[in-house]
Length: 149
Image 1: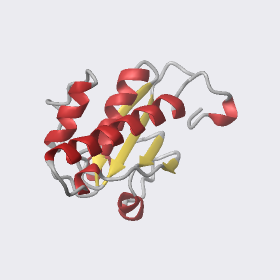
Image 2 (image 1 turned 60 degrees about the horizontal axis):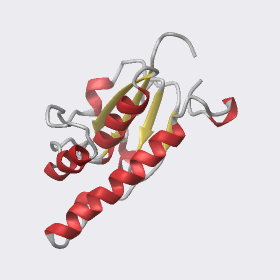
Image 3 (image 1 turned 90 degrees about the horizontal axis):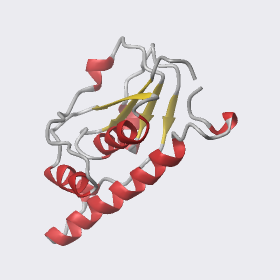
């Protein structure tokens, strides 16, 4: 890989949970290789349970903000990753985006239930995203299995 970091933009509908988690994990695990970004097609602010469950895992998202995909239009992005089906359908075309992939995760904010059930949903999605980011972006993968060269 060259010295320039590859720019990865994670997109979900509200930029409140899934894309924020993916951005934080990519920055934590592989921040020396990738510039991690996130945005939403309809940003609504970061969900408080996102901040809580990520803090449980040692990552502070309290200073993060929810951003619109419009902030990234016209910027060169090496990989645009939609992490929910709705964003996949409504995500704008990035003319400067080199590659686009989709990996859907369930929306933890859509879970209706007790406080315990809700936080467990956020933890489960957090752990799924963490595992996927560690595996999918691992720089030690063979060339044909890498998301970005």
